[in-house]
Length: 387
Image 1 (cartoon, rainbow, N blue to C red):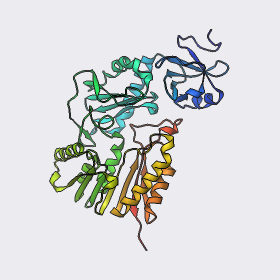
Image 2 (cartoon, helix red, strand yellow; image 1 turned 180 degrees about the horizontal axis):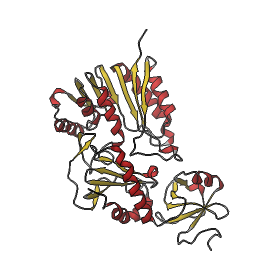
Image 3 (spheres, rainbow, N blue to C red; image 1 turned 120 degrees about the vertical axis):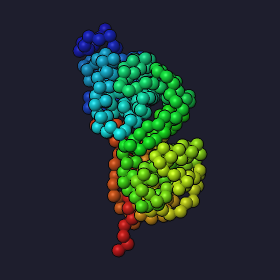
């Protein structure tokens, strides 16, 4: 028997614990398994979320693992209708990026009201990545909704999320298979992306605006880019007029792609340096501007202390190599801004000033009721005068 206040719907009602109702009502996109009263239906089942009196407080899809429900809103509606509405809203918001960029995140999961679903656009390719089992049974609906986005010719699913698909590679869901390398542009800068094998879905799209900032800061300076991957920050610095750019990464193939990206932008890679090395063991020379964008150093809450130590030791190592400016960044969601800054401060030991700090760009929105969604931290530090 359905609870008294449950509206007419075929979706089962799911009762929440008293301390879970408040966060859901305030817009938090997750219900943890401890916050559910009773047994969960199978992943992907649309559920109505109820308080102790049977009054609806939201709706979502059942998941598995620590997050039991992906909350999708207040008032239940057909999933197709929700996806279509969100598609149109997301496309309108991404128009803020500008006409000289054709690679960006179209759907940022929780920040776009579709928790666990990520859609990245690379020119005419839309890459789908599922971070929740809840979406798997609805994959045909996702394809049907987004294949009509103007200019899209291929929808490709990228695997690699352990708790969802736990395998490498991907599969073409609609349209022709993607090419091994796809050329895209970011604020007019030419880039290459490997949607089948590249990091994440191919590029680190969340650093787009920061690459543009580096382009403006690099003029006339020597630059080193640590953890460079395929050289996004490196190319930006070179286009900005850097005298020499050194790119350091332990992945040799990524650096070969970086050289090709230099050529695409009419830059001679032979005038710059590409070094295959483990940054944590690397010994380099001092430069005017040093860029450090390491991979996430904490994947679980228990790793935070170790991550703080790693960031501290890393900045202790690289600080002396930055003669004028240091660009540093973190994608570690488990560390707050305060903890991250503390680690940097302990590593550099004075003599520096914060010149610029920023986070996610417009295509990586974060819901105001979801502080856990704030993960990207980026800063420019400058040497202080000795007086």
